[in-house]
Structure formats: C-alpha cells, structure tokens
Image 1 (cartoon, rainbow, N blue to C red):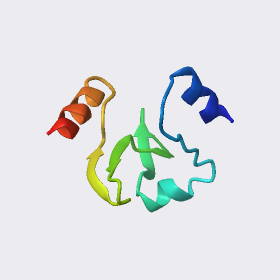
Image 2 (image 1 turned 180 degrees about the vertical axis):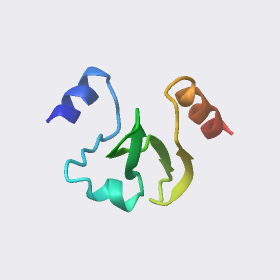
Image 3 (image 1 turned 60 degrees about the vertical axis):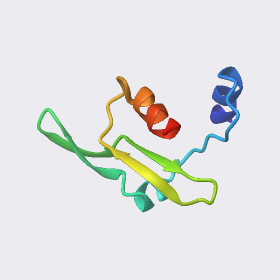
Image 4 (image 1 turned 30 degrees about the vertical axis):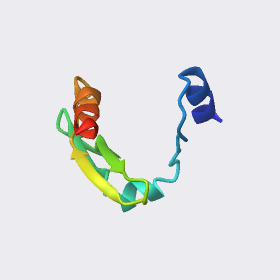
Length: 79
C-alpha cells in the first residue's frame, strides 16, 4: 500500500517492492551487521542492483552514498 502511494505520487512507471520479512534482503546479501557509535545492529547495507530485462543482475553498487549516486547509475546506464 505504502509503495503504491509513493509510486503514484512520484509518477513512477515501475513496481516498488517491500521486503518486510527481509527474505530478499538476505538473499541479496544486504541484511548485515552494521556498526554505529560502537554499537552493532542488523540493518540494510545501502546497495543498488541493476537488473536487466532478462531478470539477471547487470551491475551491483555496494555501500552507496545518496549524494550523486543516482547520477552515477544513470550515467552508467546511458553507456
């Protein structure tokens, strides 16, 4: 429900998925132990997976930072 609202508000043409049980996050290896101020906890390692029309992973970006990341991905896709 929440993803549909975001998709509609942003006029996105693709499907947004939710992974509340972390099943997919674990399969992709992004549900990891993280550290912050000396404390360890489980969380999502920010990553981007570019998936081709055939369903195969084309490129993986690990430990991404929000600043300039979208521009980098778009530039790579334009190649």
